[in-house]
Length: 307
Length: 307
Image 1 (cartoon, chains in turn yellow, cyan):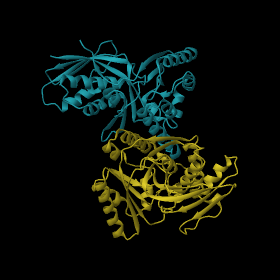
Image 2 (cartoon, rainbow over the protein chains, first blue to last red):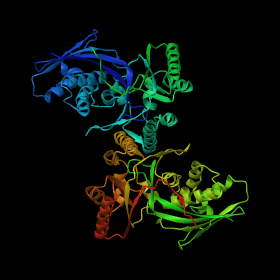
Image 3 (cartoon, rainbow over the protein chains, first blue to last red):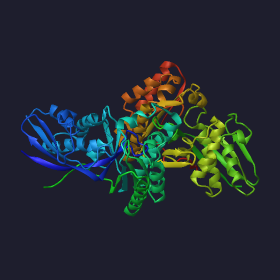
Image 4 (cartoon, rainbow over the protein chains, first blue to last red):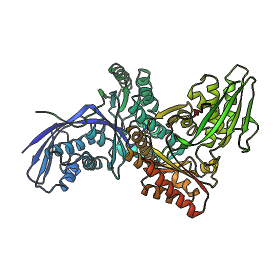
């Protein structure tokens, strides 16, 4: 039977002032996934690198979306998936979304594009539900659509691509554990109206900044008065990393998803590399193991590896 | 001494999901103001149509901005202002902003454009403070800049013009009294985080819709889950006016500023006129006196009347 090999990239959810609605696709890091079409209603998931995966596909981030997809197909087909995991689970840069979105996109390519991107987001959200208990699309949508996406609404699904300049992105992943569910529980259920007004002024400014290619406006709008003050407490070195990165020339940035990764946007590679140095220095000194990535906004999302 | 005559147009603040941060300038209705340069530090305000105005310029919506402007001018000059008021005070379509912005723009033209638009907004906000006790810019900014403006921040002032298609606007002013201060007091100081998320998803969608010229997206994003459910109680016929206008083809709309006026956006004049009929029918039946306006987005703001 036919098979396909794809890259499923990392993503940054929230983008500071866009909690639960904005996401951005990166070029690096990415998972590699091989998906093979089977001639029976069956889903098999393998890890290529010994990382322990749930054997039951319904409990697996890549498996759950494929189960949903098969519900909408009459033919006797199935999928075998081999995952080369490069995006560390728990890093806050869309590891589970890459598995879910990668599986959905690859399977759809084997079915000659039977489903729309919106269908694929709908299927892939079942993977996020397996991973975190919540159906959210702010990593999945940018992973499938590429670029920067707005999820205006989940029920009904309303995804809008936001054109954006080719910015550089520096990411540091301090290797501490921040569970998505914990990061969500520490948030207050109510917020001050005046803070909410500030936040929606900022997200409006950020969207306008991306679409106008106005880097200063993007920088000014990258401010989060609601989530970051609470969640950043869980990430040692956060304030220093942010302040020093901006001093080194970054436009701005913040917590990636629910953390612990931190991302910063820069106008050019030189600044993005200087920001990487800043981040390395901080986590060397604090003594927390870390990874860094210097990359750019990925306008394609999941892509096929020719072979 | 030299004098100038200008049109100071009505404006719609909030634009449904952009409470306190978005505003839009209209072509109709507009005030006419004549401003004359005086050769002494003095401000004189007249009403051309017998509408009673505070004689003390510091207590007058057009006077307060000019006092602030004179603080920043060393020359022995002053202004005499004659106001032909067409925008009804208390209508919720920026009557006080038109006086404040019109005075500031006209005075600046007499000074050969000494001050920037941002300066003029800064001065004109003192007029809003006189009118409602609060320095806000969501009517003043669109009145001065024209088009649709985002006030991302007031301190420091950060105003962003949002490009938008040439939409038609239908406004109905049911002649009941809704005081801005009352409309503000009935709002809760805290809002649910999940509602705030919905609101910032909508404002992001609205800005993207304006900039992409995506009328359906504009329509879907014109939703307010926080302010409208509370304030619309003060406006008889609101729900019916909104629902029937959308049935007649309007993209969407809501309360203009703090009300009682209601505005609706439409793709073309035919729909905007059908929406006007809908509104007329409702307020005829309810038996509340009303005015309606069918107009378009005014991309110029305050303009000079040649003469």
